[in-house]
Image (cartoon, rainbow, N blue to C red; front, side):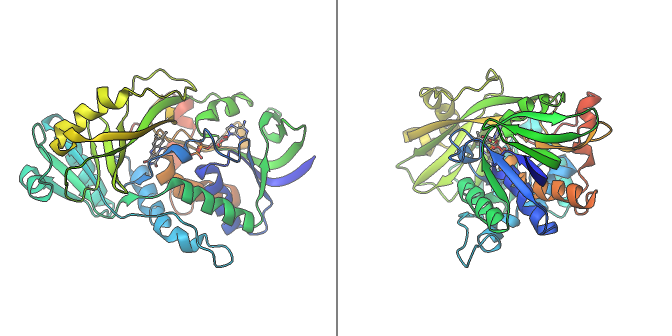
Length: 388
Ligand SMILES: Cc1cc2nc3c(=O)[nH]c(=O)nc-3n(C[C@H](O)[C@H](O)[C@H](O)COP(=O)(O)OP(=O)(O)OC[C@H]3O[C@@H](n4cnc5c(N)ncnc54)[C@H](O)[C@@H]3O)c2cc1C
């Protein structure tokens, strides 16, 4: 049996962020990350679209974005190893949320909340939208909010940068699958791995993404986190369009520029839950293209070049992550999962928050108590009123 101070299950962007920040706060800490698939074939991180935005309603989400997003453009340098930078490919292209009359009050309240937390967020009425984005059909749209400091990156670049840096700082990366967690009533003790190795740890972190529910069930903790398949598409159009930010609407159409074309999709919240990676190649034509072509007629002639699927780790209680220790039960068991489609952008802030809890026993920079497991135990949703 090997022994570690901290054992993290899941080597995606979230688990690696926890590992990195633990080492930053406590350089001598002995940290292991257990990842069953070092190629990340099914990991959500590698299938994500890379968007990072401050447009949320819950103060914790706005704060995680405000404090964590700046980490991404700085990551090339911050995660450099022996002078070799990371390659996160940050693009500060901004975000634009657009709404019809039915959602304008929500947008207004969220805008006020964002401004109240110091976010640069510009209210655009229909005339301002028309002037700024002449390609957009404003039929049914009454307003938008533009956040110019938001943007997108290459999620794989962020993950690989974190992985390389964490290892350079001494984190042990274990390519193995956790099959059981040894525990007694009040504490977790060790991870049992498929290879037969046991890995004892003073504390264990569940960063298993869409598989977090299975992991927590090994210690009897119920998590309402389900795998939700969604498609991402890369598409091109021969027609000229002005430079666009990451555009989102209330029907969950979301897309952004990518190379010579665009990357995006339209989330179907009614998709049956499960570990399904199958690709419906008609989905773009049937669902995404009509929405796109309606909003931007220049996309009438667009061609979908590639479709892939990936899993959201959907928190069915309220769509917000579960972050923190299992207070009052197994105090050395931590969860950081259930980001419901926002895990890449919130990984730096959430990783640092969990690291603070582990190393210092409290949140120092951001108080994420309201996102803790208590609300799950009490069945008290804390929902996001932003556009998802
Ligand atoms: C199509 C799509 C688009 C998205 N777009 C965005 C976006 O624009 N912005 C954004 O912020 N987020 C986006 N997301 C969400 C984002 O990808 C996730 O929230 C984030 O990647 C979660 O990171 P993670 O490290 O928790 O999960 P993962 O990257 O899935 O990592 C979890 C890891 O745990 C490992 N694991 C699981 N069980 C075990 C076990 N028993 N033993 C060992 N290892 C185990 C898995 O192999 C996996 O590698 C998108 C997701 C999808 C699918």
